[in-house]
Length: 252
Image (tube, rainbow, N blue to C red; front, side):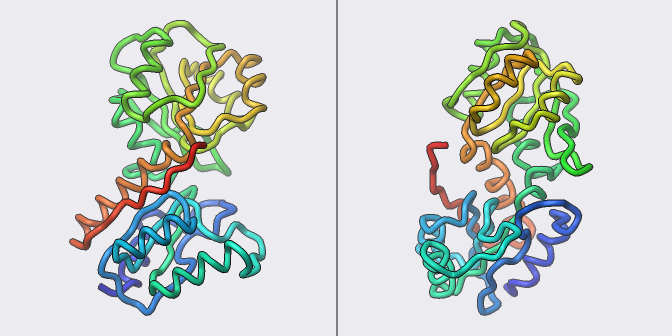
């Protein structure tokens, strides 16, 4: 299949051009023009590129790409990544904030579906666009029970701050890393009992205490596998083309 057919569709489906983002979203590295298999990975790291090449992928779609709004010299690790993409004739496509925010296959939407949140709706404004999801659990939980339910979906927690209510009925999700003061203010204003995110940050501890929040940390990498896998399933159904999720785990 022609690469541009797939990447043009991704541009439209993910509304790539409508988000403010440090990431240079869209096609970052091209190949010779055809795609037989698509790889999906969280990071455009050397491990992901190598594994995707070994799987026979001609297009690698990632959440964290190579370019972040500044000049990047083709040296060291950057050279190695681009070199191996070119040797493998593998294009690289990036979707950062557009994938966080997507209403169907975004990380946050998919996690909310797995948690069976009721009345799920957009949450967490970022430059005027909601990137997260909030909703209600289908029953009341204690904090310990709620954390166990989230672990069943995401996996082992990296941290759990318990400065909020003892009884949990509402939850909000922003995958990756979310420690912005404005976000914490929104959580408090919306009466969110449990906030689910990825990577613990030093500054979040005192903010959570001062705002009176419960925060479950499921890992930056792990919380952002959900959208990549869902996007892969979507592309497979749309184009009847083989897809592979490329797992390159990170401890954070």
